[in-house]
Length: 514
Image 1 (cartoon, rainbow, N blue to C red):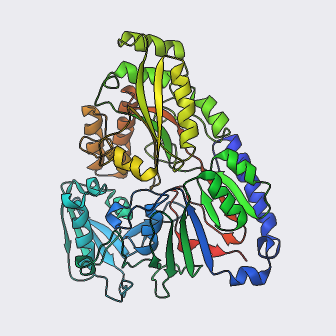
Image 2 (cartoon, one colour):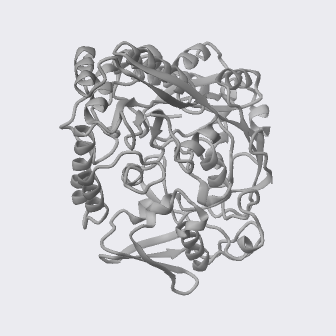
Image 3 (cartoon, rainbow, N blue to C red):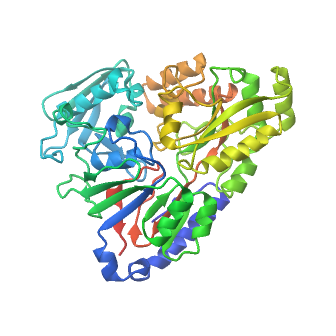
C-alpha cells in the first residue's frame, strides 16, 4: 500500500505510521504469514457497512455497498485509475468530434459472462434505460442534456448533447453496461450477466454476496478466485470479524477504532485523504430551514474543529464553507469556514423569530457512513446550546436512502456525505438542482451557475462556473458545512490493496501479499 500525502498533521501521522508498517511487513515472509500460505490464499472477504439493496447497474450509487458489487460484475466505457486519471474500460478510445458530440470506440472481442458478444447497442440500451423515468434511476440526471445516444455499427457509440459537454467521459464512469437482450428476460436487481471481472455465484442483499473470478476478463485479472462481500452493519462486529480473520478488508472505521486496531500485528491500518465531504443537509423546502438566517445560525452554532479533533482525531480540518475539498480543481480558495460563534447563532435565531429555538428531526444512517451517529450526536449537542433540539433518528442505510431520495421524506436535518467519485463535482452539484431526488434547497443563481458549468466549452470555464456555484452555496448557507471525510482502512497483511481517493473498491485489484 502506498498511502497518499495529506493536508493535516494528524492524518500525516496515521499515514506515515502505516507506511512504516507496510515496509516492515513486506520485509517479512508474506507480510507475517508463510510464503506457502500467502501463495495459496484464493479467497477474499470484504466487509460492507450496509446491505446491497440491488445489483441493478442503474441503481449503483452507494460507493461502499452497491457500487462494490456492481463494479465487480459489470464494466463502464471509461473508469478512473487509482491516481485519478481517466482510462478506457469497455472503450479503447474516445474523442469530442464536435462541441456537442462525443464518440467512443469499443474494445473488440469482449463478451458478457454468458458468452454473448458486447456491442454498441448494449451501451445505447443501458443509457436509455437509465434515462427512462420508469427505471427511477438516480443516475438519470447525468443525461438531462443528452439529445441522443446511437450505435454506429457494433464498435462505435455516439453521444449528442444540447451543447458542449466537456465532462461527458467523466460522467460515464458510473454507467455500467447491461446486455440488452439478456435484460429482456431477467431481473437485473437480483441476477447478473456483465462484462466485469467476476460472475455472481450467490446474492443475499442483507448477508453475503459471493463472486467468482472470470478467466476471460478483458482487464486486470482478479488476484483472488473467490470474493465474498459480507454485510456487517455494526462497526464493532466489523472489527471483530477482521481480527478473527472472518473478513480481510474493512473501510470506513472511525479513527478511534483504527487506533484500537493498531496494536494488531496482523493488520495494516491507517487513513488517507478522500474526495468525500461530510455535511448536514437542511430541508429548506419547509420552515424553519427555508429562512437563510436559521441556516446561517446553525453553521455558527457548531464547533466543527472540536468535533473533528475529538471524533476524527484531528485527521481533517473544518470544511472551508463548501462541500468540496482541494482534491477538486474547481475548489474555491476564496471561501473559509463559518467560525464557531454561538452568540451570533442565538441572535440570528431570534431575528428569524425563534428566540427560544425549535425542535426538529435529525435523520442519520446507523453506522453505514463514517462516524455518522457519533458526529450527529456531537452536532445535536452543540445545537442544543443555542436552543435547537435535534432529535436523532438513526436509521438502517437502505431505509435512510429511501427516505432521503425516492421517499422525499428527510429529516429537518440529515447527516450526509458526498463524494466517492472523480475530481469532477458535476454529479454532486447536480444533486442540488431543482428536481433532483435528493435536493431540498433551491437557489436560482446556483442552478444557473451549475448549468453554465455543465455546458462550458472548456474544463477551465467549467471550473470557474463551479467555483461560483460553491460561493453561492456558501452565501446562502445551503448546508451545515462540516469537514472532509478521511478514508480509513484496516486490511489483513495477507492482502495487498491499492487505496484510492475516490473510495471506489475494485475487488479484482486486491492480491495476495507476497
